[in-house]
Image (tube, chains in turn red, orange):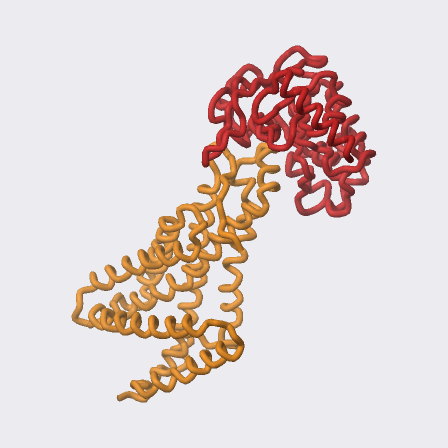
Length: 237
Length: 260
């Protein structure tokens, strides 16, 4: 298993030998390489603590690497205005983060000027009806809340969408729904980076998967070992 | 001895309530007896020392510079006190001192600029003490609440940052909530003044034999000044601390807070 390009071939986001060390000296990432292409889904899998989420957060500069480089559209991400970068590299978190107020209020956090027509269109893109606009965030199911978060991220018109285990808190039906939505977004030209600790899901989303183990790109042996342990876990469940 | 000079016998009589507090602590098993004794003793020693020093500063023949020096020292002590009460807040010593200095400058500018009180040690020292004392408490609350809100709502703040918000936009709802919490007690006590309690200055003036209507006008001016001072102090804390909680590239810093 290695860094892969699905349908796309034009890299939009590149991680070159990135290291990440915490203030107290813990090394979270050690020289990870990854290439994310337009119109493709890049799936990152690995056990808990492998550095998957940290790597994702480097992609929109919620974290900065201790060494190495992240490039966006061919340019060093460190030289870009983080606010512009983040609007072009959207992010969906593991647990849906909803702000106080209605669905409309939540969407307008991403674009304060957006008219209702535009909000209805973006809700339609994620499979939610326009009638949701006046619903209060607390009333939404987990799946609906995550779809709303995706819609909110899409309002900034990103080129890349980083999805950090977006279905880990969802039931199987909603999990499949969000997976299908991600693939639809890829088909529309978006680059999606999907983090998962579930290898079955990872393989369902993409034929090749980037595996991280202990903060490194896994070699064949480490990837095989992770695969065996994941299959044992599945068998025990 | 004037009518309002309570003398040593009066001080000794007030200790009866300390004995009551000690008895209640022992009865309820609060284990606060040592703290009560220490606080009472410390307050006594501090006030004696301050009283001695104040006598020099407030002497009508003393240079006004002593009074100004007193205010500067007061700002420094207030900064240290704020730091001691909110150690988890990054940069709070300097920020707290800056906030107290801002309170001093603003309140003295109003007091002296409008000629509200004569410029003498006996006016500026106690007035500044009231402004700084009230603002200090609000600054501690503001500092702790800002750190608490931004840490507890980290996921929301980062979700806003991930949508391209600047650090100031991402923090605004949470900082606003923290500042509201810090300012509300002062607003409530301003609303309740006279109805629920008689503030210290008014009580002191009435006890000293000042006409009640004169005492009220002085107290009113002081209450407004205190409200303005508290608002000034938490604004300085809000602006300065929020900036410190984020990196220049709009990332939220992690703050280690004490357990419990």
